[in-house]
Image (tube, rainbow, N blue to C red; front, side):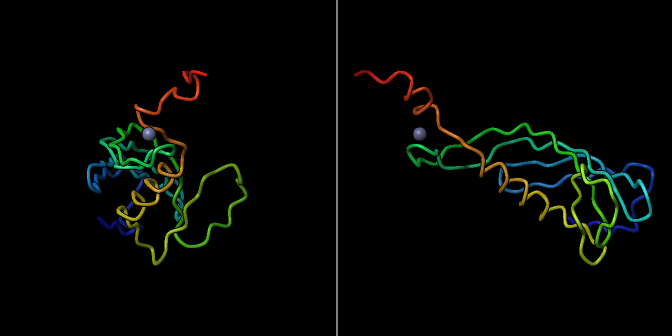
Amino acid sequence: MKIAFKKLSSQSLHFEVNRDNAFFSGELTLKKSNLAQLNGTITGSISTPCDLCAEEVERSLNEEIAFYLSDGIYEGSNEWMDVVEVDHSIIDMNELLRSEIELIKSDYFCCKNCEGTSLDREF
Ligand SMILES: [Zn+2]
């Protein structure tokens, strides 16, 4: 799913996109001529390896996602904001979901079998 930046307005635009078993839905709202706000959630699941035993497990998702999108290079001074710069004025929702999933995958994760093993270890 690709959305042209110029299609955005102050009226929220609903989007839905999925990748494997992960679903990303939410709204895009234009805040300024070249700045839009994205609010959404990622649900469903992703397959990811356990950090301890490396076994692939299905991890369920329930992530609140919120950031800004800038049409071209963002030159604002609000450094506290999470701003993603959009190339060629086209917002690639699949690409946004892919990078969010990469972020989630980079978090520490251990499967149910490994959960608590370091605490329950018997000497
Ligand atoms: Zn494990």
